[in-house]
Amino acid sequence: MKKLATLLIFLICCSSGYSKDPESKTFLVLFKSKELKESKTNIKEIESQFSPFFSTKHYAGNSELALIIEIPSCDFDECFLGEFLVDLEDGRKVQLQHLAFRLFDLTENKNLHQQYVLMYEESVSAKKKAAKATKADSKP
Image (cartoon, rainbow, N blue to C red; front, side, top):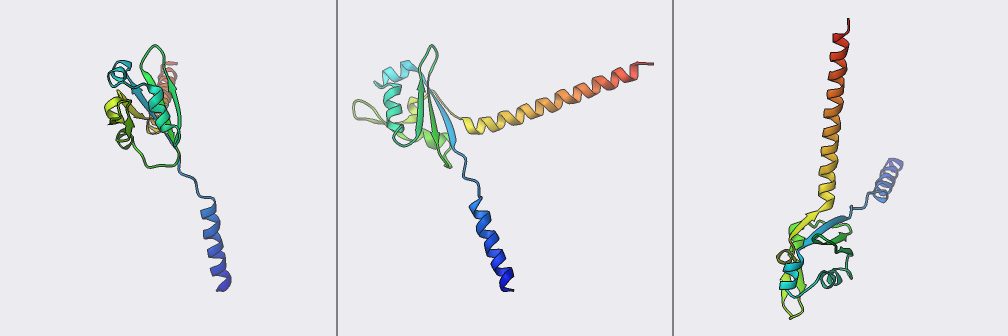
């Protein structure tokens, strides 16, 4: 009986040692440069407020300004991230969602994308099977 209890405790300890760490989440925040100018801030200042705590990258180009924020092992969603306060030059604090054009949870969208790709591949393979069956039926 003692051996069984020891084995059970050992198995529980080993399985918790191999438990999977929670996946980090990646968010994409899009800004319009016109709106940032009206708020008298820029994407580099916004990024500097997130970078001490999270891994960030910003992109500026011909289209909207983009900020990618990677948050390790969290239960955040885009609504919670949008409620973060951002300091402006004039000392005001504004929620990120009021400055941002759009907020996306790329981790969630990646999972949805994989599901759509699988559904598409299944429909394509079903069509190919149907086409092969019709070709086989049409040959004498």
